[in-house]
Amino acid sequence: MSANPPLRHLLEVDDLSAVELARILDLAELTDPPPVLAGSGGVLLFEKPSARTRTSMEMAIDQLGGHPVSLSGSEVGIDTRETAEDLGRLMSGYGRVIGARVFEHHKLERMASVASVPVVNLLSDDAHPVQTLADLLTLRQCFGRLDGLTVTYVGDANNVARSLAIGCGLVGAAFRISSPPGYRFDDTSTDRIRSAGTDLTVVDEPTEAASGADAIYTDAWYSMGQEEEKRIRQEAFARWRVDESLMDAAGDGAVFLHCLPAHRGDEATDGVLDGPRSRIWPQAHNRMHSARGLLLWLAELSTDQDPERGGTS
Image (cartoon, rainbow, N blue to C red; front, side, top):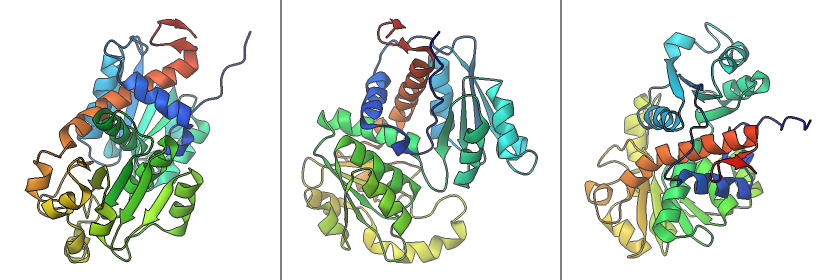
């Protein structure tokens, strides 16, 4: 009898190899995925409110024949009602996967350290790997490839930017970033990004960063938990708004991406968000497809089954 394969989690994009990442993107595009979660499902824990993440994960689980159970922060109370470790042990008995959207990244690490099913980071203050899967799937659909692309990120060097930068390194895309002083990657993030093999370039001027890029990406200047910083951030980021002139600097073939929700008129103008180069809605819908690809890959690991052939690999 063969030994069980080691349990795999996705807490950051570099938990995957380049080959594994490509496999997930391939599985995401299956039009008739097998019901690998039939008779089971997944447990989704949300410390933060969610629209795209909850909907996409619930739909992905359903499309694979499983039943999703979503719980709010007040229902689970990670480290208030129960420890992250106890929740990892508990929820492992209810489904084939645990997804958690948290503030502090260490809660995911502690949950994963004791869970007997895969733990997936649905967002933490440090990382947003499931967003990156959707981003890369969208870019591959736009350009037919990922290797050799240049992705420019304009704005806050946050969790979304860090995960995307790491993902670019795994697929052979260059990553440029332009952020205001005080909102740039710290040394720890920079080291991890470069360890993934990313061709990382930090550029002061957003127009210079955009020049010749294949994709311009931005995110909200402030997010949940940062509302009190709204005015400060609006002033700090004013020169980093993505408008039509910035897109023109990138060139006619460039596409615009945003992980949403958008604060229209802040980080991007309506003309860009709704313009012909915008791919924000296919990108948002790819959250579901890439989540399905991830779940298929995790099932493939645990059952040694190839979803494309319906049998053992």
